[in-house]
Image (cartoon, rainbow, N blue to C red):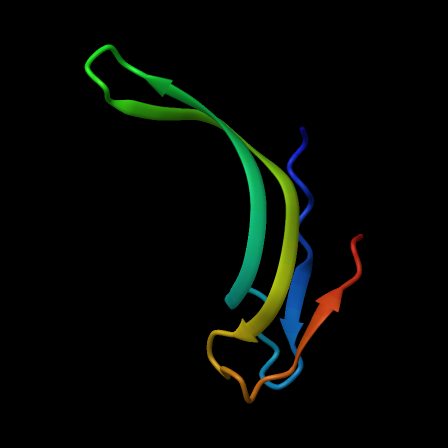
Length: 72
């Protein structure tokens, strides 16, 4: 399954385009490969669903106003 595209964000308070604290819930399916000795390697993780709950500017925190930018 393809990884969902991630939107770009912009803080309208300070102009930040690069640093955001994103709180999200993901539902995933992962391929776990265990060695005979019991060591785990996760070889593939597919994101089945993702719900972004909150986005905050790292610099402004909750006082900032973050907008989602249009793709392209």
